[in-house]
Length: 354
Image (cartoon, rainbow, N blue to C red; front, side, top):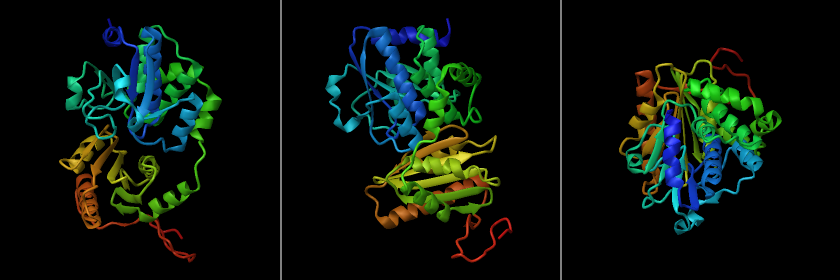
């Protein structure tokens, strides 16, 4: 019996004699969280007739993610508007209790946790857990569950799961396993390719371009690393999106992007280095101040700052940048601007061109 077959039997035991379940995602869910939640709902509906709600505590900010939610026809619930007493079971996908990136009330212990990030201490107390930190996407795990249960996902779910794997592994280019490749290949055969293309080209508001401009204007190069900040933001997904964009720089091996969202300092790290461990670096940065996690090539963290003054926040940001630079470059070298704004005049860039 495979690992997933065994886990499916355990999961069915938990489903037994229950009628309702709340599935909790990250506060600002990405495609992997969204697709995995829908897949778990499909399992619960089909195997046990359980009615499920899918909820999160933030917003779906990235244009592609909003397009995915619209395509799936999802009615996502806000956790702060949910009566927890209405649900018999609680599940978490692509996140875990105590990670700081979800808003499940602390007094609610989830019955089910399925995730591809490193196992957190609170997770070990839950009734059912399946944590596979080497997998590139939680959606890959859920596809294995659907297969083990003999359930064929409909085209919208197939398309969502394919997009989830593509997104979390950067088209299988980062932190992926054979399981992810196999899942990707199978899903691609039946996914809606036209809709996949439309999701990837989700429409953005014009404020998006101003945020990109600000991020580039604030970007500073330290040897093989780039650091930038977005200031106070309304869309926390932009932090990760800018980090992904800056990693395309041909001389950068490390990226750090941070911004303030509703009193929380949020950080995203990215690296190209084969031996890089973004997950370890983020833990060093947020240790004793907040929470963080991720994978060798990408990671994120959060530090609550509601009780800090503006001056204290600035001091914290400076400290985090200094620690990051020492961690990834081995020195505290002074940085230089990534781009140069010259007021319309010709000016020399970092590569010597004008």
